[in-house]
Image (cartoon, rainbow, N blue to C red):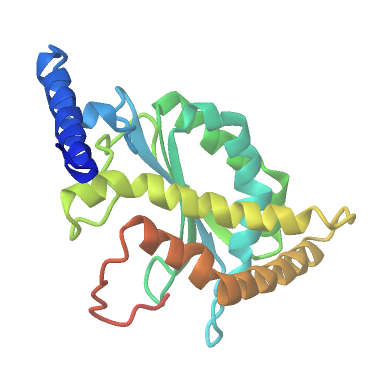
Length: 248
C-alpha cells in the first residue's frame, strides 16, 4: 500500500513530467535577447549635427566668477527658444565653465539638430531682449555660435569625453540632457513664485541669485538620495573609483 508521502512524491514527479513534455512539445522558439528589444537612449539621425551657442560672460579681474548669470541665460534667454523648437532637437544640454584662460567664463547651450533648426535657434537667441539687456548691462560680453552652413560633428558621441569608453560616450548625451532639464526645471519652479515684471536687469539677476541659493540647498540636502543614490541603484550598487578630486 502506498503511503500518503509516497503519493505526494509521485504526483510531483508526474506534474514535473507534464511541464517538461509541454515545453518540449511546443515549437515556439525561445526569443533571443538583442538590442532591438531595448529602447535606445540615443538615435542616429541623418543630416543632424552638434551645435554650440556660447555666452562669454564678463568676469572682472581679482574677483570670483558670478555663476548666477548662467541661470539668467538658461531660463530667460535659452529656455523660450528651446520650447519652440524642442520637437526638432532630440538632444540638448548646458555646459558651464570658468577659468582664467582665453575662453574665460562661459555658459553654453549644446544641441543636436539639423542645420536649419540650428540657424533658427541662433537667430532667436540673438534677438532676445533679455540678452540685449544683459550685454548692455555688462553682464555678457558676447555670444559665439557655430556656423550652420559648415556643420562638423554628426556622430552622437562627438561631444562626449573621448577618454570614456565608446559605449558610455554614445549613451551619455541622454543622461546629461536629463540633468540639464532637471536644473532648468528647478529654476522655473522657483521663478513661478515671483509676481514681478523685472524691468531692471540687475533686479532680475538678484531674483536668479535667490533661486540659485535655493537650488544649492536642494542639491546639498537632497542630492545624495534623490540623484546619486538612485543612479547608483539603477547601476546595481557597484563600487565607484574616485581617481581625483574634481572641482568646477
